[in-house]
Image (cartoon, rainbow, N blue to C red; front, top):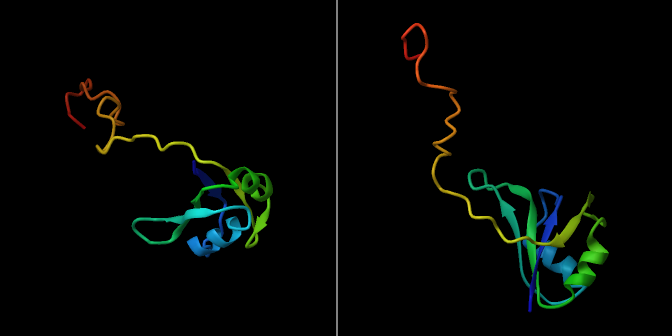
Length: 107
């Protein structure tokens, strides 16, 4: 069974191919990706590597190691949490109590 690894503190110039090359030294890499910002396309400084085998060795070797001038954080990825797609929590508006004030004005 393959394991998905989180790789943090990446250089903004790191590519998915760079990750594949680094992790392939420890086992079989089935997928690698660097997460980029939706709007700017710039790297967000972290990524994921899916490994068929060798994941434990990769974690032990690469967590805390220097890679492209940065100290990597490598661990087993946690499942992504479901987030609502609404604009926010309507129960907690952010404008305080809107029930009115002593002056009677709305704002």
